[in-house]
Length: 121
Image (cartoon, rainbow, N blue to C red; front, side, top):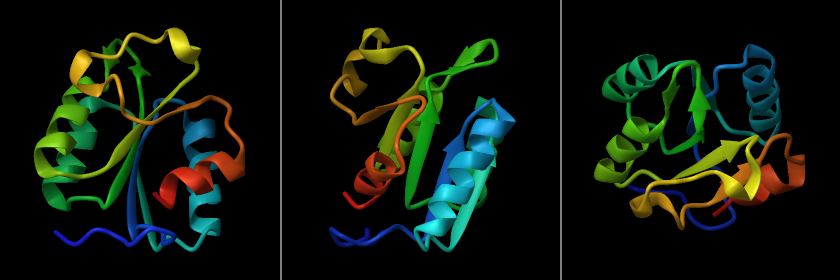
């Protein structure tokens, strides 16, 4: 799979976020950057279903979803070689499993500039 060059945005971003207001805000901001397609999922099952249908070029994963964590999604994306980052309201103290400890992460809320920089990696 061909990934975007540095300084360019992915064409298809998956947002995994259980708060619909935050998901909508991320979606609007990312579309404003010129990303062509943004899909959202509020659960692990829905996110895995969307990945199965069409693999995204990048994903933003809220760590803590309602009654579940997004780590199964991270494992699937990692296996597919898809770049992703965690978004969390828990700050630096969030416990990420060792395979994902060095993955990029953004705090909630985050600035548009921080999100833009992350997507251009």
